[in-house]
Amino acid sequence: MAPLTMKNMLPADWRKSVLVGRIWSPGPNGGPTPVVLFEGTLYDVSRFFSTTSELLNTSNPLRAIRLAVEAGAPEVPQLSQIISNSDYRVRAEQYPYFLCPIDLQAIKAAGVTFVSSMVERVIEEHAKGDLKAAKAIRNRIGQEIGGSIENIVPGSSAASKLKKSLQARGLWSQYLEVGIGPDAEVFTKAQPLSAVGSGAQIGIRADSKWNNPEPELVLAVNRAGTIVGATLGNDVNLRDFEGRSALLLGKAKDNNASCAIGPFVRIFDRSFSVGQALRSKIRVSVDGMDGFKLRGSSDVSQISRSPLEIIKQTINRTHQYPDGVVVFLGTQFAPTKDRGEKGKGFSHKVGDVVRIGSDQLGVLVNEVAQSNKVTPWTYGIADLMRNLASRGLL
Image (tube, rainbow, N blue to C red; front, side, top):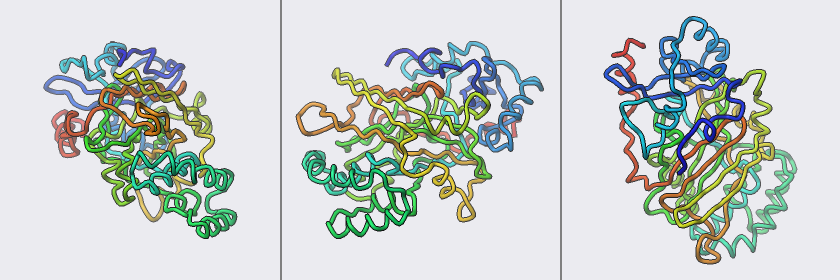
């Protein structure tokens, strides 16, 4: 993993971006601290907002940030050093470093929202999680299903007719049900405070043999259901576990350090709108210690189900999120490139470096490790509340 720098982590237009993040402030009075990168300067806004959840839950985060800066929020010096210290390999604990930019928000994810991911999930299901069987199944049914659903609007009458046709041919799947049916798949990806940020390790289970990164746009939504910003995420997926049974989704998704978000939440303003976010092209690269390289992308504009509809199905009169919620939108990226033996496709190896980036949101960088060997998650909500109380921030 190359050293973290301002150039390879921040958005291209960071000087005119409004970016919300969190740093770990060292020392006896330190702890998780909300910060904003505003007009090219990093500010500590903890005196005004004890958590990023509180900030993003304001009716107008952009205005709230501007008022905090005008009211004297202190500058945080040495941005470049904080970024470089965020690399877990060289981190000096006596200096600040960046954390995942969210804290108390619920972390949800939408599944099978792109045609390519729908097809791959059906293949996983038919393969029963067996990587060796996936290629033959892909050749047998992948093209047929993909061609059928490519232009189908989820929940439409055309989708209903297609469902009957695929059922008659024995090709229907629970993944197609949530892919083109009326109800989106929205699941809990991780617990509040458990996600890691840029420069940290991401985790895969040691007993998983078929897995991959999932580069995604992540929308930040306040308690009222308003989308206030966007960031990047890696919804690490264990394809063998989920392929064996959809009831193993928790084991396939919610593991130690398996959720990475960051590097910042970019607030919507005149320079970056929700419409621009939903037209993002997200790049992904994987570089292995064995010399393996994988390059790909995900075009958010090609999503099958409207992101606004996904948010409406996530937060509504049926379910509320008083601390706000972030929602992964799914990915077009489904790697099948052989890594090693022909026909076995792609799976992570320990030491892989995953970079997920876009010009407007920066770059999220993580190194793959086993979930049972990364730093355990031990800092929970009670720890945060005690810390904030001791610092006089509650």
